[in-house]
Amino acid sequence: MPDRPIGFFDSGVGGLTVLYSAVKQMPEENFIYFGDSQNAPYGTKDADKVFELTSSAVEKLVLQGAKAVVIACNTATSIAVDRLRETVAVPIISMEPAVKPALEQTDGKVLLLATSVTLSSKRVCALIKKLDKNSRVIKVPCPDLAAKIEASVFGEEDVLPYLESVLAEYKDVGATAVVLGCTHYPLVKDKIKACLGESVLVFDGIDGTVQHLKDVLIQNNVKRDEKQKGTVLISSSKDDKKTNELFDRLISGGIL
Ligand code: DGL
Image 1 (cartoon, rainbow, N blue to C red):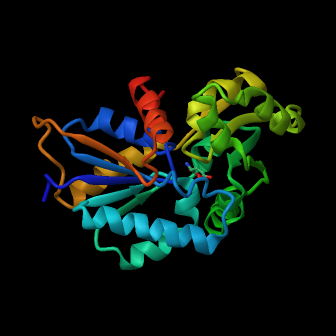
Image 2: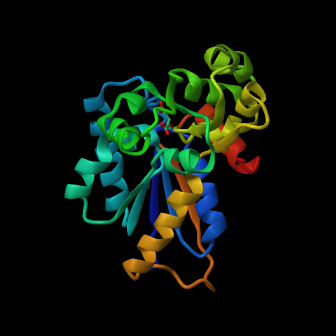
């Protein structure tokens, strides 16, 4: 059982930011990553469609023998994780926007950047209601950001003007923290900081997710021996030259 892979899933390349951290922390594990680039972005689709796509991707990873699945996509998590946990036989680890540490470690407004689907989901609304007793969290929908980040890898888009326009109205609200509620956004963390000022703390939730994955593997007694060397297999639902190059550029560039 420990030799079975850990499945990773995202609508495209965003989940690589989480995979990267998991591989760094657990190089002994075998990983299989599936990016549904054919259907990306998820953040502009309706909830039923996001559920259907996420469910079939998770099923695919389970059929490939995954001992646990990481939904490395906030949008897919926000819509699908609760229902999938009721039916899928292996543990599912998911992304939670890092609102809690942002509220605990800073004292001003907290800007939560995510797709519109994530921000309007019941799951994220409930999380904010539970944690944000003093109305410090401000939701900032970034509907086009994930697609623009992917295009920027080829120099086809400059993300900075888009970020400037989205964030302009929040520059003077007294923000002390930004929560990156989409796994694509750590790829442009520096640009987000450049828009809001270097003193703003950025929280991405990646380390928490990877730590949770590690804990779950240990609890289920399926963690591989640390002396072993693992493998990483990447696949995408869109097998064209440009998508392959996008994955290659991010992976060979060290991602973060
Ligand atoms: N990485 C996804 C997320 O975390 C991307 C969003 C999308 O596909 O629109 O939400």
